[in-house]
Length: 340
Image 1 (spheres, rainbow, N blue to C red):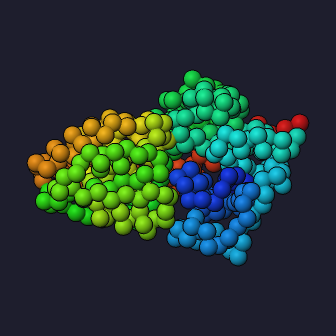
Image 2: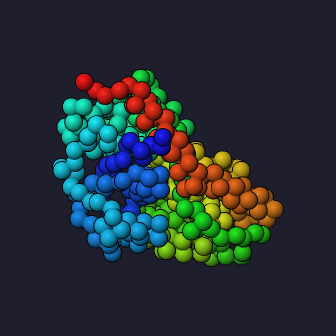
Image 3: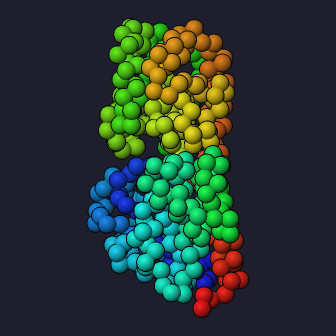
């Protein structure tokens, strides 16, 4: 008996349709659930519009009422005894909790924990930490996140790591050799201004800088990565993964990154990227200057290791692991029997 033979419906709560990293991951799991035979119901306070940037991403273009997907307001959700629910933001449980039927087990709620911030007592005024202690099923997007939140986890609940998958093939570009006489350096500026401070310090004709200042579509990001010889990662101090670093790696750009927690899931410093200190423009400048005399063979080895890294974070692999997770979870729930 497959999961879908008994557990048909799964509610996905999302706070927005903006294509930020956490929302994109929710919709990856919407696709996984549909492929596995479940009926995803998308719960969002915003109205569906097919021309929104999220739905212009090719793999989400088929998610529409026209193709049979149901969209509802979160306030109208009611999770029955054979429904599942999927949440990502801690505060979504405040909406969902009162909408579980009296026969619904708490473990029918799957919480994907995407960020080490969950272990920070100031994040959501401590609500995230308190939520970790409640019974529900949990997916951690990498082992670093798991280790950060482990002290607060409900030990009776099912918790598994499913390494984050991504469509890195969209950003891929094969390249080799050294860097040109004018090194092209790219960064994004919507999370941090450290890239601007680096560019201000380096008024050097041997370097050219380009930035994207506001969240944009994937086409613009791919163009930036493909233009760049070097990409400056500018994450927040607590990140769950920091996708731009992996995307730039897929494009063969040399990645300079600080240690921001979750990005350790793919950053192997001095192997597939170079380490800089967090929010320290002098550290970025020092490493950039060293690249003028870098050995082309070493850069090629770093790129190749980066390409190998991206292969570990595919959507197909994520879907397989999610299917196995659902099999174990629903068997566990079936063995418990109905809640009286």
